[in-house]
Length: 372
Image 1 (cartoon, rainbow, N blue to C red):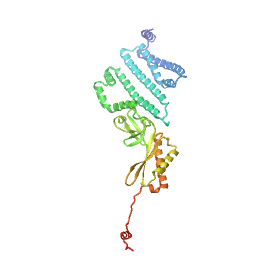
Image 2: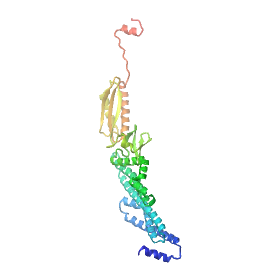
Image 3: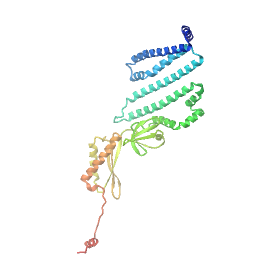
Image 4: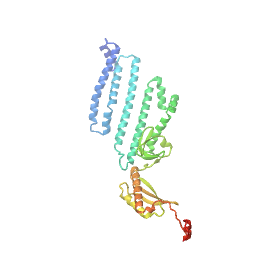
């Protein structure tokens, strides 16, 4: 049975009704049929994926809305084919259905991508001690999802524009970045496109990752969020530093956790020249070993500079991650200073003045007294 046969049958059955009412009835029946088919298909799919992986179960659940739209479009296409529409009316309806189909494809594509990345990221925990692998995968997933979302929207909008003859050139220009409209759009959107491509480069090369400890513009903090255009740095005092993505491609910055989360903390202490370094070194090692923050890998105390008034003592201690390293530095510094104050107060920095006299008469004269 062809569409022409169905159309002829419908026209004979409703010959006493106006064409617009026949068309309205057919389209309404198509929507009702789509709703019924959707419910039946959704139940079948739910039972099929009941014992399968989480991805398929989530795809069916989150894809319910786009699936319903797909069913409506399919039945409306059939309804349009059998409706007594003029060529102009049929063309308009076909264009609308084509736009709906493009939107459905984009919607389903993004839904599938979002579900896959969400399930993928659930395998990694940022609160683990060694979270290098987690930071790597979560950073890549978040950046690629945001970039893919923008690309899906751009491609969908371009495809929609290309379905209309009057604006088809704009769709081609948007999709291929060609022509005068494409040049104007490219110039206007240069900052956005610059950061978009920087985001793709960051996802591949990964100079920074989520939860990395970095120093940017003189501020120390952790990477809290990476969007498609900017990075949010959570500074140590809970302020947020907003940096464009392109900054991390074009300018130098410090990344303390590039290869792993472990760090060596530095404690600088300035002491008098008479300070007993061996005793202080032994006490520093005892403090490090007694601390639950120390990872047991690196401890060193050495005199790194000797000046006219003080000598510079550097203590190195290591910990599993940046926050623990900072706390360990503070602990070692406080306890070493307390130990020196208690045991060797003369070892703290001081300004001294010595007065020497060769004979008692000289000393008495200097003090303003008559020699005895």
